[in-house]
Length: 178
Image 1 (tube, rainbow, N blue to C red):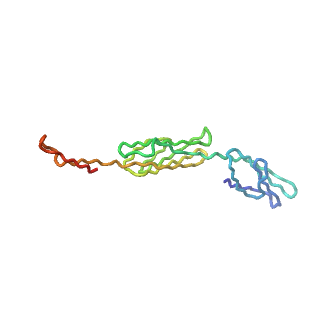
Image 2 (cartoon, rainbow, N blue to C red):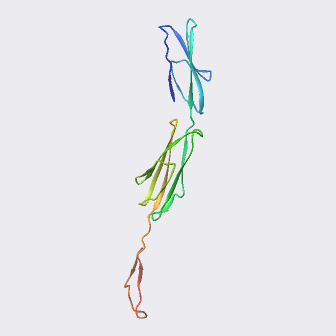
């Protein structure tokens, strides 16, 4: 939303005021709020006319940028704790091809980054909330979130009744205590 104020120096004269966007009358107030659904350049003008027919016109241009649309991509959304390696990449459609994007990642578990992509290995299991915030040069902000899961590793344990025996004469008893 643009908050636009018209300033009138009329030395006490009565006047009428007119706001135009792309040469179309939109309001007759001294101050206006403008919202635009489409990005682009919007020429605006503020016209003041006294009762005697004297007038003045001031012109300006408003620039509306498209919203940056960001997504998070990862190599896989679920891995085991041992040897996990999540590769994250932010993909976006910036406001134009010349736009510079500033990225801030929060990978959960205290990991963060300011690159456009990164590789993280988690040291604990559980659901990890990954967040990417992107800001482009004109100041348009967007964010994306996703959850990944680090599964705990099972613990396998072998318990033998004895670890040394003579062949032929004794039997081993093994128990699975996983």
